[in-house]
Image 1: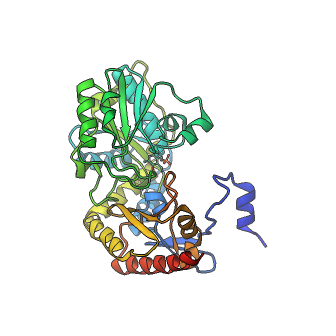
Image 2: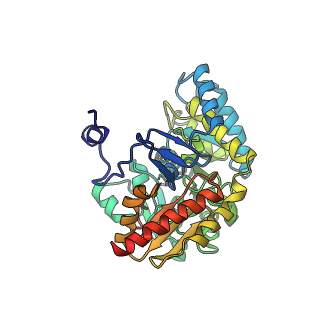
Image 3: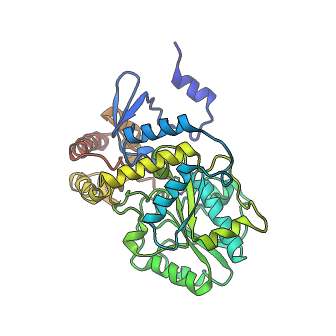
Amino acid sequence: MYSYKEFFLRYLGQTSPEPLLIQVERAEGVFLYGPAGERYLDLVSGVSVSNTGHANPRIIDAVRRQAEAYLHIMVYGEFIQSPQVRYAELLVSLLPENLNCIYFVNSGSEAVEGAIKLTRRHTGRTEVVYFSNAYHGSTYGALSVQGSDLFRSAFGPLLPDTVMAGFNDRSVAGMITEKTAGVIVEPIQAEAGVILPDPGFLQLLRERCDETGALLIFDECQTGFGRTGTMFAMERYEVVPDILILAKALGGGMPLGSFIASGSIMKSLSFNPALGHITTFGGHPVCCAAGMASLQTLMEEELVAGVVSKGQRFRSRLRHDLITEVRGEGLLLAVRLRDAGKARYVVSNAPRYGFVTDYFLFCPDSFRIAPPLSITNDEIDEACNMIIQLLDEAVKA
Ligand code: PMP
């Protein structure tokens, strides 16, 4: 008998000693289905990707139609590819005035690489300020601004001239100087365990960047596209960055990333030297078509408007002796338990109860609630019942 589990473990490079090992045959709405018809309510969305639900018919249709027209035809930036142009135009119409020029790439990590290169090239400076417990991706530039000494020391030496500041620590003001090229921050830190910025913290970064001529970069890979109850998290803090990074839900389930700036800043990558950032598959036409269909669905079905009350519904139902806090905004929530062992128990036993959840990279005592934004009230109630039952079991475990 062909064993997918055995061959998954044998032939695929592993990311950890304990993969979740759920086999998925198909997915629809908020559910994943296994080969024997097992049904799992998805509280992860592939890590904040599937905001408009799995197997969304509009996205599938857009993918099919673009695949029939053309797949890859040329590296990014040479040919006029209508899905890129149309999607860029739609995105710009939703963004603050200065964020009017979109550079499409393949992933969040590649967008971070592009953004760091752009800040250095545009300012002529080298230093980049980043924050404790920040996660921006796994490539070398992104790893160099990752706020974890464990990961940094395992793979060093990293990029020089990077400076770590404490998230929400206002002494960062003194670390942003005339030597700073850019400051990279998640407006809401996701993998840190959904940590919100203190009032005025993002404004402080904006002010110091304005005073010193550094560029402010917001990484909204996880918080973008309605996840926290506004289309982008920056809207709730009324701070506009110089560069915005989007990925994950940007592609509607297909791989797509982008960094976005003003046309005049973005120009720096196209001369002296020209071709400052080249990407073969960046802005793949099928991914842009899928992303645009997903964003149109988000807008036309007014999915973002329901996110805050759905998050509140989770909060009001998630009451249990083991839960010490439910933290976050909208449908990006961290459920904190009494200890990390209980959180591990929940993540590994959730499939047995009919749902999937996940860890946060830097927050071992919490598990994740980030379902597709299309989740219904009944599905939320079902998810909460399963969680409470599993927590009852975890108390005794
Ligand atoms: N930035 C943030 C905030 C992320 O959460 C992630 C992925 N978890 C990335 C960047 C990297 O994205 P990718 O995995 O697409 O490279």
